[in-house]
Image (cartoon, rainbow, N blue to C red; front, side, top):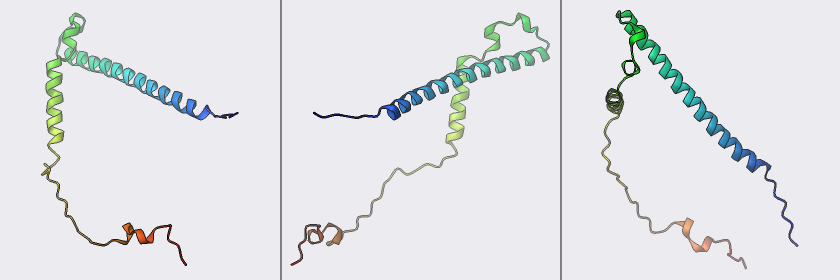
Length: 116
């Protein structure tokens, strides 16, 4: 009879700990994005109030940046930050050195060599 004594405590702790960390990170990101949206709306409202526009009459479409503008800004930032990297030639050069004998691959130095 074979008896297996497996300790699953460490594996279960690691698994559920990793899942919990993932969910906590997602929750933190959702909260950060919601707070960022509220902060940006507050800033836009304060700018409109400084311009003399009645903030209470504004709709949601007046307070949010259109998706096309967001995509254009994201593309501009992407192109700007990728411009700092220099272009690579994408050519790999391998210099082959040919050696006829190497003691590392020699069978005479194997572990089964018997001394008489």
